[in-house]
Length: 533
Ligand code: NG1
Ligand code: ZN
Figure 1 (cartoon, rainbow, N blue to C red):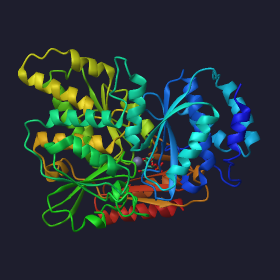
Figure 2: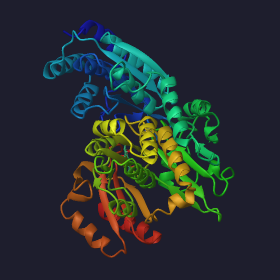
Figure 3: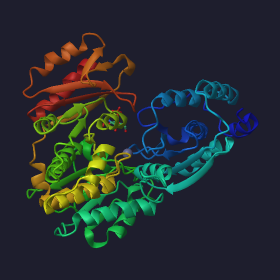
């Protein structure tokens, strides 16, 4: 049975605030950091139980609120292969987090253990990390109390990025197997990425300096270390690295700021030179947005869709050059937020699938291809190489030197890319590799296709659950009649497209619109928002 006395004596130190309701959403639990104490304690218990359920495999816990404002915080679980928590457990997490008292929690836990058939005699192992938020240290203490309540073995990976934590989980669980992912330390991660990068870039001219906006978050210290490992293989300049300045995190900087406002962070205005490449990470370094200023100092954004276009074509070319185009099919996964021009460009070249918002949907769909490339427009994504593809790449006997080179590149790409989850630093190195191989500057990359002007707005509504969708969120099912009205409006705009969906992370409904002319995209978005309101 569960150690009731132990759980009780620790749980009373982490009482649930009476009025709050918590929900494990697409990004785990996420809300104001100061309200999350009881949630972290209970997540500690849940992580320990998840590990027992999976026969003592190591589970990850990441404490972060990503691109959200500094006072927010959050927590999410990572499954043994470095992937997001299996969705059937999201409901359990929500239920446990909302048990009002310690007694109610104990009852809920007993029921849960019975229902899920958890063998409590199994060991439990957990590794956790946090980002740089000021509320982090206290929340980690609450988490540790939850782990100790169940007697779990745990490892504190300290202050690091979300992708590093995912890497560690996968590395720990595959140690000593034929699927070994790398040494299970930050050093192992940095070595794996930088070694692969150096091999891929070898012989190519050193690219011009890249400016990285670290969002004043945890990406900064990890990027500093990465630069040491990369040595002079690529000149990098870091900015927005002020992790100790109160209020600086994600404030007018970072990937979400750039994508949402479609402009340069003010702090870069006097720093970025025309023609120079730059990119922004988000607060936990799993999103990446590139941009540059043209010679008229006009801002151009290269978002997740542009990254997909760049990377997918590069991989398709390599697979072909390796003589594996019959055996390995490359495909792309997008969401409804992908720019219409990107979908058109990609669909003309390879299979493209559209899925609902949220990385877990993209990730699962990408697993159906031999090589699956997925990025959300906001810059969160990666490339998955299936076991079939990896086996083909390692066993294929090249018949020409060109095939042999292409195979080597593919092998190194598999090591360069963090396949557990989107990883801004790994993705950045990937982009740099492709740009160097193609001798592209931002201008040539940008000209693969022209983005349709677009606008994303939030609408606060009485009940966002009244909005339900179909067709990968591109159409509304309810409220009844609303989709017809949206269609009617959209028809009046040249190149018009618009859709409405409830957010999975905020209590709002999002409206997206695009059209051939910027003012029309804005107008369409606001008129559709008017219908929703
Ligand atoms: P919601 O709030 O469901 O739109 C947002 C992002 C997602 C994803 C999640 C998780 C947009 C429009 N939505 O989801 O892409 O990143 O957060 O962080 O960017
Ligand atoms: Zn993030």
